[in-house]
Image (cartoon, rainbow, N blue to C red; front, side):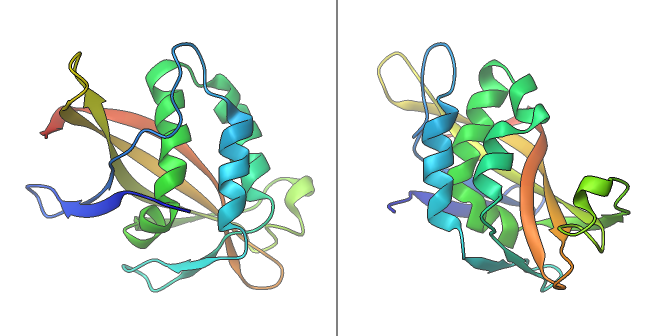
Length: 174
């Protein structure tokens, strides 16, 4: 699986995952089936959060949850394309994640797969914006929350990426 990803620091020293290729594009909507197929490449992998040293596993439920959650269905336009293309940088998004915070599991349907609750981490990524000449004009920076479930086996699994918001104050120049 070929990926064109870099991790850079912004002016404040915070990490940003630079996703240099737009793999999932379209004028109208995202083909979430293609994203689901792409995400299957990560299943079975494990990545470490540099800030906390937590190991985050990629389980077989990620492709379906990432592409079929209520949050994903509610997305339109730029944010939908941002979530689709953020899938390319999942290893790096996990590695640079910060701000770990815990939430109790309150749903019976998750009594096994999130027996020990949920964690959220903050991460950031940037996607290129192309001009009419096909050249990169700038990068739009996005904030995202990584949702991680703490399974009954004691392992932590990436469950979804939500709350994606474009940072309007600081697009990056090319």
